[in-house]
Image (tube, rainbow, N blue to C red):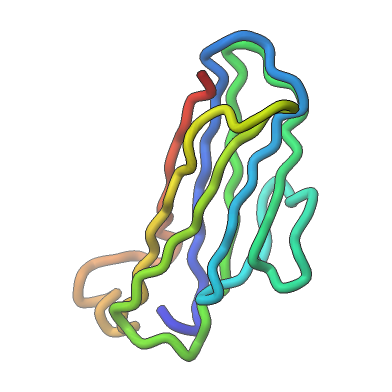
Length: 129
């Protein structure tokens, strides 16, 4: 809903060998801005359009999750799509391709007509090769 918030759940895992200094990045477009996360982000740019979580070293089989909230620009019309682009990297390079999360604005009335509930989330999972 324009002027509202969206909650995004991210899960990650390492199906390969030991990886050093793993970070997860999310780029947030101008239509939204970072609000908060659990666990807290290690870096958020001043405009709220980029967030980073330092995951540290991941042994094979390690996994975890991050949940973050973005504030949706109140000037957007219903029916506008925009994309969050998230990626995971180790100390040398990207470990998997970018994951794109598409969010769509809807009219507040449509939430109740379509049966959505407060607290609904959108998420993705990616396995580190």
